[in-house]
Image (cartoon, rainbow, N blue to C red):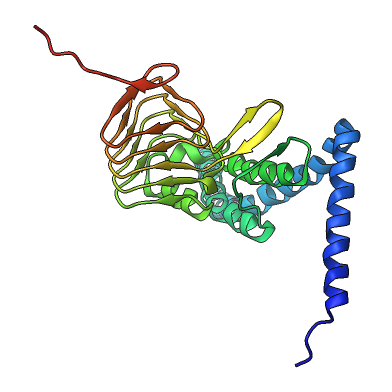
Amino acid sequence: MQEPNKTNVESIHSSHKGFKGIFETALRRFKVAMHLISTLPLYALGSVCIGVAFLPGIAAFHWIQTSVEGTPTLVQYFATGTSLALGYFMYGFTMLFLMPLINLIMRTSLKPWRGPYFSAEAVKWYIHNGITYLVRFTFLEFVTPTPFNVLFYKMMGMKIGKGTQINSTYISDPCLITLGKNVTIGGSATITGHYGQGGFLVLAPVKIGDGCTIGLRATVLGGVTIGDGAKILPNSVVLPKTVVPAGETWGGVPAQKFTFHKAA
């Protein structure tokens, strides 16, 4: 088989870099206009995905309505209410599998990065989280905590060990997060693989070791590493790049090592 011409390959790479450079230059110079141009197609995509996810529910609704034609009015009211509720849950479970597929097709898996908010990499970050939030704000609460929310996060790229429970939907950048075995994420805890610093967007992995506990409404930011068996107390904030050693208990804002004093 004939090998690709080196000149052609270099030309393709050069044109790709050139297009990306032009796109990023336009993003920074015409921020508002380019932001609209970049995000409007995403809203269109979201509308299409929601429409596709509603198809099974609409089919079920239509079938049930047809089945109860000619029955007493009360029966028809009950069938309408039930079919609407059934349609919504069918929509939700469809979204749990459809949106990770869209994420895979669009190749929005994130890597550690630091750069301007108005850049091509930031657009990819926006898409990845937009896909996550579309499920989060329309259905995910109904399957948290169950194996379904763990499965959804795994399909979105999060690494999750056996026996881990996630009792929160406040999670961003799932593909940058690693949870070990038997981890407990408390209710409404926030875990995010990004933060802002000096006008730049920073994408940084979060690693939480085996047997850790993240307390109720605690916040773990990008670049944090938490060792095996460590505990983060409720309402605490673990700042970016913090390393919590194995077995320690941390708490407060910002979170620091917490020492328990025995009563005299």
